[in-house]
Amino acid sequence: MHLADALGLGSSAVVALVGAGGKKTAMGQLTAEGTSDGDAVGYTTTTAMPPPPDLPIVLTGPDEWRSDLTAKEPPVAFAHESVADPERVERKVRGFEPEVVDRIADSGLFDWLLVKADGARKREFKAPGSGEPVIPSTATHVVPVASVAVVGETLTTDVVHRPERVAAITALDVGDTITAMAVGTVLTHPAGGLRNAPSEATVIPLVNKADTESRRQTAKAVLTDALSQTSRCSRGIVTSFEAGICEVVTATPEREASND
Image (spheres, rainbow, N blue to C red):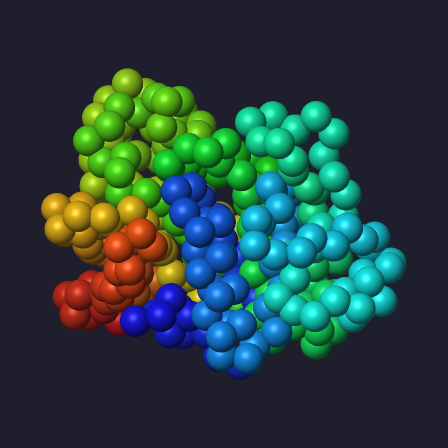
């Protein structure tokens, strides 16, 4: 199954990706799928990001974007400016305020607009800080992402961005072993993956790096727990972009009945 099909993207979508452990890879996958199907795809951020290696990058201003982006054939990545002396990467660009992204989304230049809406400092798992995520109001889909590789690891900054925030919304303490239940809780918690999601957006959690059968089963357990904790999400997605896995996990009938 294609990721776009699993997400239920139609002919027009604004997809905000949050969390850690696969946002950029998922955005690259959606760019490839949309382009293959003839869709005009835009790729940007409301925070900062390394430019995607396989796309041209356009640096433009909040008033100049229409002419600058019209001059480029999609798919195209765009942002506001380069970040001076970026940490951990050779190059990084800073994106736009969400209001500017909303105007670009409404302009009709792109069929699919993909938005990296927070950062994770190359960690596998995170919970958002007080100013995160920065999701445009036009987002039709919000995709909270986590890597299944963190299950069984220790809740520290070695693998988790802001472990203290994860501890605050789970039963864990910093230094504890990360459980599938804890990852599921963060993905669909109001202070986690649901934070700042527009009320009308479809929210679909994604658990990545299910590269083995064991991890695949663990990822399903994560999503089963995540979906049991909210009526906001009716399905989640297990992925391994390395192994070509994209599988939908749906909420159980028992959960759906309990939320009626």
